[in-house]
Amino acid sequence: QVQLVESGGGLVQAGGSLRLSCAASRGTFSTYHLAWFRQAPGKDREFVARIRSDGGTYYVDSVKGRFTISRDNAKNTVYLQMNSLTPGDTAVYYCAAGFRHDLYDYPYWGQGTQVTVSS
Image 1 (cartoon, rainbow, N blue to C red):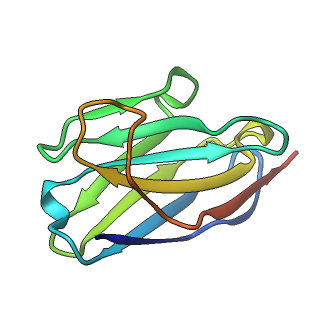
Image 2: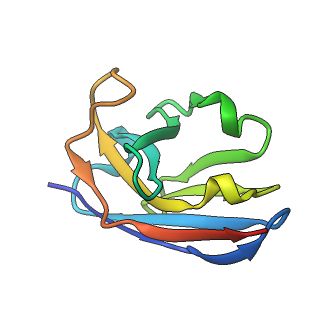
């Protein structure tokens, strides 16, 4: 069973950037599809981006052109580079790992990291 630990969250002004990291332990990292989700206060958890085991990526429309998901299989780490941040991006960000083709179905989750964007 893979364990995921996110880092890199924090407070940033609108227009700024942050890079989130998610380190995995156990499991065969290179075989997992990896994703980032976020949950804002009072809202449901929202899919943000995914990178497949073969490197293919997919983004929710609201972050296209601003966020980039990437992975380093040698470091067992997935990243989310977030640029041009807005207050609407404020949320707890979670990484997830799984094998299914379904964009939203992952058995393994991290504990989350808070991102706060001030106006």
